[in-house]
Amino acid sequence: MGSQGIFSGLVRTLAAVCLCASMSLAALANGAVEVTIDSGTMTNGYMNVFDLPANGGIYRFSSAWGIGDLNATFQNSSTVTFTPNTIGDTSSYWYTPSGGPGATGNKIMEANLYAQNDGGLAGQTINFKGNVTSFTLQTGTNPNTDYTFTAFIRDFAPDFSAVVQTLIPITTTGEFSVTLATINDPARHVQWGLQMKGPDVWATDVAAKGSVTVTAVPEPSSVALLGIGGGILAAIARRRVGRDS
Image (cartoon, rainbow, N blue to C red; front, side, top):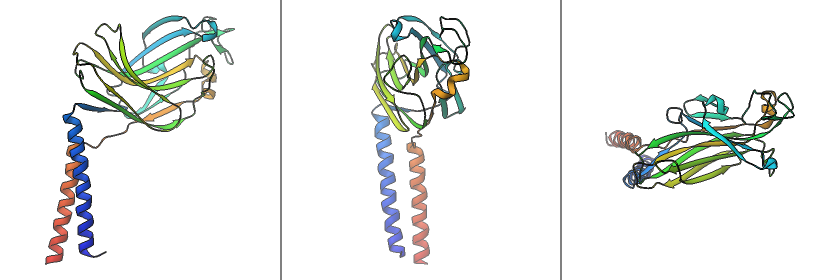
């Protein structure tokens, strides 16, 4: 390719970069906030426990749980793996007939891993993105034996009595995006994260139920894009000097 062709290609590339940068700046101006998998912000764990649907599906209790107790593990700051929940208690409350290898889980565990912002995102649009790099979870149509995995954004009332939310079921590998326009009230609580739901399983049997691994989807910042543009401009200048000398 001649120098003129190279120059034209560089100009077209720079134009595309500038367009991306302007789109990113426009998103910031419109109040859009991009979030993704991050161990520094996704520091909260919460568990809801129910009877199996076959036993009436009655709500039993909820409480904050440690991330490890959710069976969620960060491999690094931007990668997390979930497996179904395990309970080491041999009581028949948790297993049928009792806890041990091969036992049947007797409770539905809804494990939530999430970030929470209190008031700072009021009235803004939140985009939560991630990339599912591995999905081997046992799924199906039987809620007593199968599992669901979900990405969510939730906007809670100040006293957590009501919620507006967007939920995206995850059933395979690939990228996902969840979006929610939050209510303009600084007393509300905004959460984004991941949920594993299904029956508890004895620790020796959990591998057969599968797992889900999710990584961050980084968004190039406007500053980085403009930095790339500056580098291209420098390259163009060098090409021009080389051709004209």
